Length: 496
Image 1 (tube, rainbow, N blue to C red):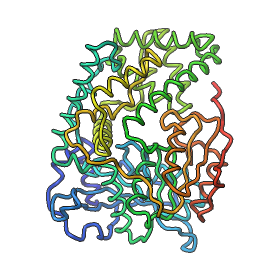
Image 2: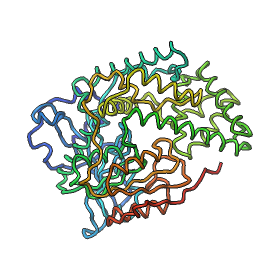
Image 3: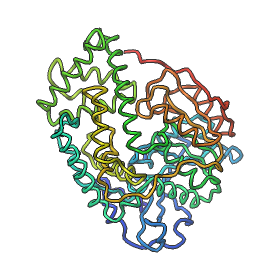
C-alpha cells in the first residue's frame, strides 16, 4: 500500500485540518523531485481496460518564499496514454472546478468521456488542489452555521434580517480563520497554479496541456499568466469571467433567475406529466408554495436553505429539471421533501471541505465586497425577483476575511499560445458573457459556443459531436477554429 493509500483510509473517516498536516520542512528540491507512482486510494475508480490508473504524492512548500518552512502534500493521479509512443502528445492536467473540487478521481472519470484520440495521445493527470481532499484538506469548522439543519432562510427581507445575514458572514470568516490558521493566505488560485507547475516539473515535462472546467477555467488563465511558455494546449470549458469573485457571483445569480423562468415555462409545457400548472405563472406559484411550506415546516431537516441549494444544483443541468419538477409535485401531493433532496448529503466531510476551500480560495484571489455592497447586491437581486436564489454568493464571506490580499489574481499573458474556450449559450452557472470577456484577456484565443443549450459543462460532457471534434482537433494537433469562433448546434430544451 502506498503512503497515499494509507493516508486515505484515515481521511475517509475524518478530514484532517491543514494546520495539522504541516509537520516538517520541505527539502529544497521538493518541486523538482520525481513522482513515485503506486496504488490509488479507494476514492479513485479503476478505468476500463486497457487503461490503468496510478497515484503519487508531491511535497511542496506552503509558502514558496520559505522553501525550508512548513510544507504540504499534493495527491496526484495519472492515467497513462493508451496509444503508441508516436501518438503521445504529453500530459493533460485536468481540473473539475469549484474552487474546492477534488481532481484525484477526475483523471479517470473525465478521461472516460474524452474522444479516443485524446485518450491515446495524453497521460491524463488529476490532482487534489492544495487544501482539498487528500492534499492537506482545510476545514472551516462550523462554517458560520452553514451546515445547520434546517438552515435559516438565506434570503434577508428587511434590515434586521440583513444585519443577521452580515453577522453570519462574519462568523463564517472567523471560523475559516480559526480552522485554516496560518495557512489562510496560501490556499489560493495562484498557489494552485504554481502547484500545477510543480507537478509538470516532477513529471519531467517541458510543457503541459490543461483542461479546466468551470473554476478550472479561472485556474488555467492564472497558469498562463505565471507560466506562459510552459503551456502546450489549454481548453477552458464553461468559463468564469475575468472579474472579481463577488461580481461573478452576482452575474451567476441573475442568470439563475432567468434559467428558473425558463424552467417554469418548460414545466408548464409538460403540465400533463408534472401537474404544476398550465403556464409559467402557475408553475411559479406552485414552486413558491413548496418553498414557503418547507420554510414554515421543515421536513426532516429540509427547509428553505436546503430547498434553495437543491434548486441551485438542479438549474445547472437540464437532465435535473424533470427530477426537480417531480420533487415539487411530490411535495404538493403528499408533503414529503424526499424527492427534492440531493442523493449526496450536504453535511458530509467532503461537502464541508469543499465549502471551506471554496471560500478560502475565493477570498484569497482578490479584495472582497464591503458590507454595504453585500446588502446592495442582495437588494438588487430581490428587486429583480422577490424570491432569488442566493446559494452561489460564496464570495460574500470575503467581506470580513482575516487575510486581505494585496491584489487580484493575474489572468492571461500575451506570451501564451492561443487558448480554446468552450461555453453553452445559456449556461446559468458560468454565463457565456464571462467566456467572451476572458477571450479578450487571452490573446489569440478562440471560443466555441454550444447554441440552444442550457447546461453547465460542454466538452466531453454534452455528447455534442461538433464540440468534441473541434476540441479534439485542437488537443491532438493544435488546430483552432476560425478567429470569429465556432457555433455548434445544441439540443434545445429537454423532452419531459
